[in-house]
Length: 217
Image (tube, rainbow, N blue to C red; front, side):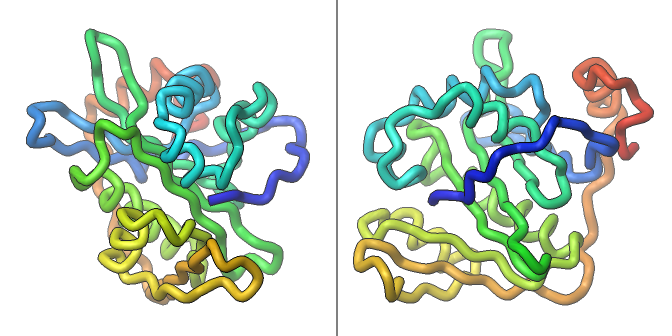
């Protein structure tokens, strides 16, 4: 699902939304962590995208074969306000690995946002995508957005089914017969967020170079 690619201003962050972090066990006997992306995740994000099957890459980027280093930086250096990116990670051979990326970009006017989602091929149809979309919708609701929308290729049946399960309305795009528009109106009230565990607080203080004053703990 393509997102608008406008030139990014010099990167600066004042607030990391640690309250969005969640962890859960998985039936593969692995601990999964959902968290907002960090600037230093650019290399992990590149590994995730480079490891996608050609069809999965086409479904996510609608034909783009490879992203430039500048685009990867733009995807990892977000302001968490007008552009929020959530990643799902797990540990493989002692190293952190990204297995999913879900994000939205707020549109002009500030009422709604365009979303995008990609899940590593080996983790599809295992509940990771649904978890990521639920987290994204909750964050958008608490940010005061009224709707989320995105474009899905009409041949991407797993994604279309996921959109239905997540409460999105689907309709053919008037300007592109290969695209289905997904739209979800969001609840007007805030949704409770999970508490940040002490172990995650410690990890964040190590991971975030600006120090704990930048964290919402």
